[in-house]
Length: 419
Image 1 (spheres, rainbow, N blue to C red):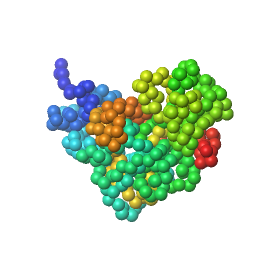
Image 2: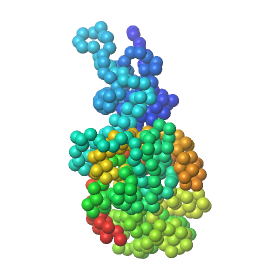
Image 3: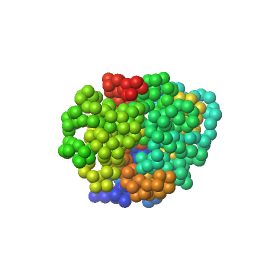
Image 4: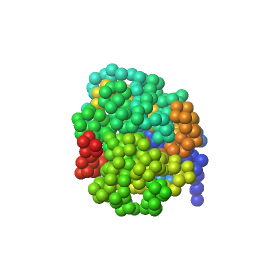
């Protein structure tokens, strides 16, 4: 009886898979990692049987993964000699070594993200030669430097990031959007609800990638102010809820109350961006904020209770947006930016230390705290089925439609609706 040995991936190889997955999806990343690492051990190409055993994926998953990898141009199909009748079995090998393959994966993913954006917005790819280079973009982030921005610092201030991307910071999604629309910045990180409101107002802005797949907005309180554990939305009736007007957090807070049928039974207090102080002073019973706000209070010794918006209905968090003309005229530069961001996400999720130190140098916060914030955000708000199948940043029309419909039903899709 003949026996054959097959090399297989193990837990020591997970780092390679995690590096590739943001650019191509989980199963293709596993198959590609196998082929890359196998090429360092064996010269012959891998058959489907070797791939199935080596990756632990079933036949259907391997077939789909190989199609994805061939389309991306990072693996080549060939055959292996066989003594049996019929055509020789198909086999696959990588087209290049690890580093060029990884760069090719990120670049192909960036191209796919832009094609997805054009498809969603009914835009044609320009047939004219691009007037822009790969450098010289300005990127406006939606708040002061913090852990949520870590992948962008990993991308644009690292040694391998695209050249000439200038990071700017704005006080909230509304300001980041204003800067984008006015032409002061080329790319913005803006809350998904704010993007939809801008599009309804006729602004030619296009989402090109979803930075975080789930909204991070929460309603939270401290026990000494609320007087009892907050465990149910029904407990919000008759309470004062602090939120900033016109902000992404405020829009999502109002949407949350509308969706759980509490919009008319609470008192909304405009806290002007000082929600935490209003909560601790007793001016409001509950505050809106980002997921990190209540955790900061917990670390300070407070007893905190939280209701997360995304736990009640799945909607997008911050997204990358551009003007239509930028998408039309600066394709190569945007591809470089998205490829760099994908690489930054991959680097940050594997080891956030270096990028956290860059953010800390601008923010004054500790690098450990910044890394901890990103690790939590990337774990709780980054993954979903679309990312697992396609990689970081992927957007689906159904999720946008869900949010658009909810905002419209709640009268929040126009500026006056959330005033």
